[in-house]
Length: 247
Image 1 (spheres, rainbow, N blue to C red):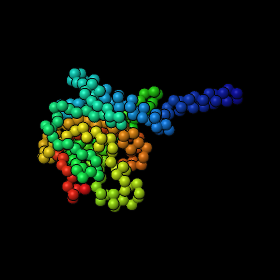
Image 2: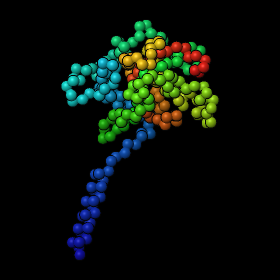
Image 3: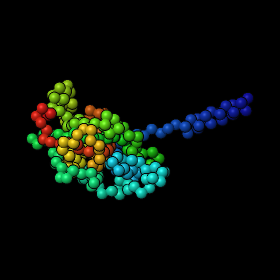
Image 4: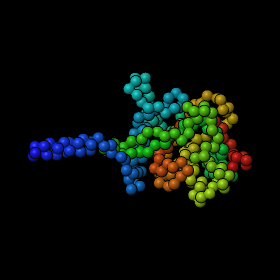
């Protein structure tokens, strides 16, 4: 009888141990915002080390294939990091000359409408067993692999007054609920093309990487993307002072 009891006990302990080993640890968002910002910074650096730009300016991940051995990492390309943490990369061979300056102040009398070919992805930087990295990409907008046609004034760049006026909650009446400040900040350093046809082949101008603190941080937002880092890969096909009927 004692032997049976011991067998049952040993089996139970073994089962419990196996179950514990099989459990996947779920990432828990750190309470300290400084830890979140540190995760973003580390993960963005790793992202820049693991990706490059192809001949059309698309972000591509390095593979074991020798074909990309001579490509430069994003981190090795000329880039600027702004005080906000926003990083932008300009492809010198893909800029308009001279191009049109972009006024990203939504309330300005000279605020710019933009028509852009864009791939906009979002990520959550996580830490597992000491390894910090950006998680699986989520898609905010992708006209490059999707419709193949540029989009005019995506909502995260400019939200129309009609949307704000029709909102039924106080927070939804605010531009900050929709617009990503880090994107607007980064775009100030680019000029746009003018009157490119929607069907013209793209040659992406560059990349803007926005850590969560320069996006929505932990604030409620239209997209439900708290703590998200955004990566924008784009070309501005056309820009002009926003017409009255587009405000």
